[in-house]
Amino acid sequence: MTSKFIVGLITVLLLVVLLVIVPVGCDIATPKKNFRLAVPTTEYFYNYIAEHLKPFLARQGYEITIVPAKDIVDANRMVAEGEADLTMVNNHSTTVALALGHEADQLRAIMPLTTRLLFVFTKKKMRDSATALDLFQNKKVGIEFLGGETHLTLNRFLGVSRIDSVTFQPYSDSADVNAFWGNYYGDRATEWTEKGWHPFSFRRNFIEFIMLHDQAIRPFRLPALPGDPNSIIANTLATDVILVANKNLGENAVYLLALAIFQNKVELMRRDMMYRSISENFDKERLLYPLHQGTYSYLVRDQPTFFERYAESLALAISLIAVVYGGVQAAQSRIRRNRKERIDKYFLEFLEIRSDKTVARDERVRKLDELFQRAVVQLTNEKLDKGDFHILSRLIQQDLTMLRFDNMH
Image (cartoon, rainbow, N blue to C red; front, side, top):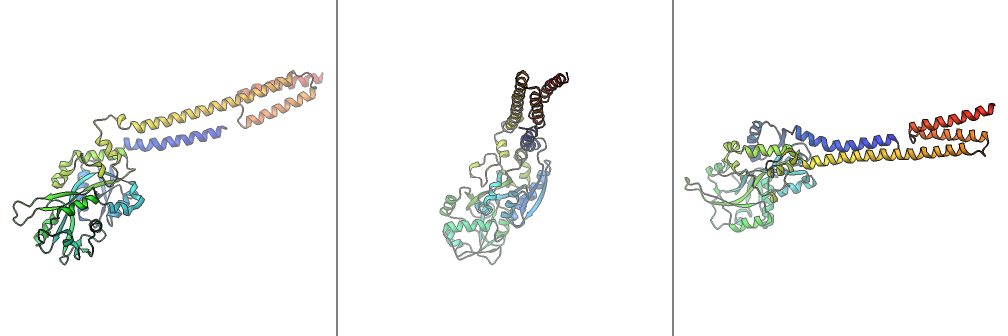
């Protein structure tokens, strides 16, 4: 094992250590504060939230750059591929995750931001006994964007419910039904009501059936507006909008981002009361994507110390350093031992030549010269210690000098 090999081994091991330590160290010392937020241009609600998040996080010391995406699938893809850092998605949108394929494995949920309700408005008021089949079958259904999240959601719901012959089109007064995911008594719901359209209340069996196929969906009973005699109680479906990041986004960066949002949610509530649903007590098991390690660390923080929060990373780094040091020491010890064993053989061979009185003088000179040449080759190949070689060399040269002197006399 040559010194060049040892140097190479040390270099490789140190690179491994640096690959582990440097990213962790950067995330701890200078956590990411500038985020690219992918927002689908076709989705009103996500743009509405982005208008709140950007100035809100700026006041917490963050820089948010809005990156336009063509739709919700594209926004999530951009985060998975590293073209953006954050995005949003409805928690029940398994269709989006399935459309991403293996890229969805790169995504992690940071937290739910708000609750969304499924609003359905009909041109003609339907009787109280009307079913989802009466509502959708052979109807023209208006949605925000063809191929968008509402379209994907309703297609899935109607597919499992075996309701067919539905024609989807962009929002229009010519549609029989207009549907969207919105917030409680939001502007869009008010607009459709003012146009003379009628909110639809789903029957219990449809809600329970959809929940059976999607555990991220829950029932919601929206009360009638007390001051509006025409307002009705609407039984519908609810989901959450979740903030999404790439799994490789630094743990400490996400920890601090979660801290900023959870601890300052009242400021968001001043913009819209829908943010009152931000809570640390969300169902982690029913998230569309696994929970990011940074949020998990925040939720189980209980005032941990620096070393408690990063114990695993630091322990791994220290273990790698110990392994590198131990490997280098073991390799050097082995090299020294091998060199010692080789030089001992040369010393023994020298003593054997020197003590053998039966060998003629010329033969002894030849053997000593050969021994010296072999030792030089071994030294050149870094297989002998230089100090021991010099001692052997002097002994051989002394013997050769004496033999040549005797020959002259």
